[in-house]
Length: 110
Image (cartoon, rainbow, N blue to C red; front, top):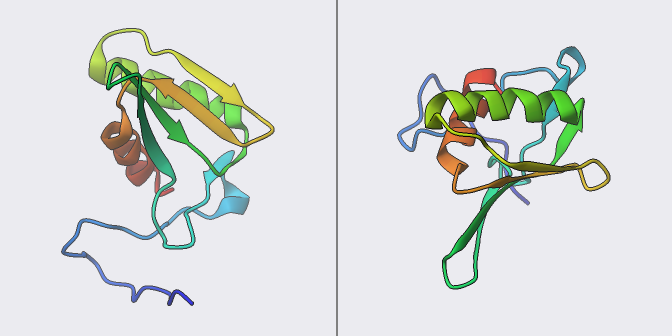
C-alpha cells in the first residue's frame, strides 16, 4: 500500500502534488498510483526513434493535445507531430519532450 504524501510548500526532489480539481477542468491527467506524472519516453531502433507518451488523460483529449502542441511549438520553434488515441486515453508525441510536458503539467496543476 502506498501512503498519501504529506503536504508541504516545497519538496527537496522538486515533486509537487496535483492541485487541479478534475470536475472543474476541461481535461485532467490522472497521476499514477505512486503519485507520479504519467509521461514516458520510448526509445527504439537503436536510439533513432524517440516517442513521448502521455497517458491517463480524461476529458477533452483533443483540447489537451492542442494546448500541449502549442506549448511545445513555442519552446522548440518547429512543428510537433502527435497522435491521439481516444480509446486508450493516450497521446504520442514524436521526439523527446518528457521534461517540457512535465513542466506544462506542473504549470497547469495537473
